[in-house]
Length: 86
Image: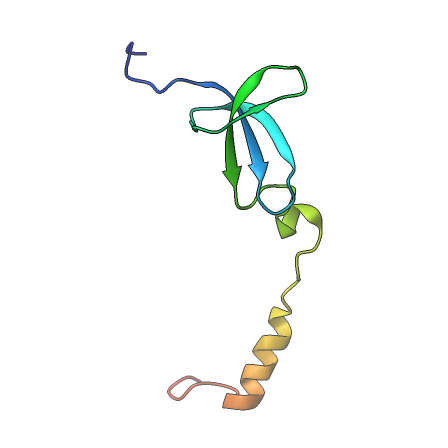
């Protein structure tokens, strides 16, 4: 690796804006805001709109789309096949 061209990789706390959950990890993200972590050390704080704590897939609240039902509804409304198709 070339020296002095890569951003600094350091510990950062990410906070979910919806749930308030916090995660300590390493990142190149920076912030003017800081927070004191459980170990007494102060880290940069980056607020994110969505994380695994609030994402529907990870929380189990994701809605399953009934694609087969949507296709049948479309066919009932607009017919079986499009013009020019056999």
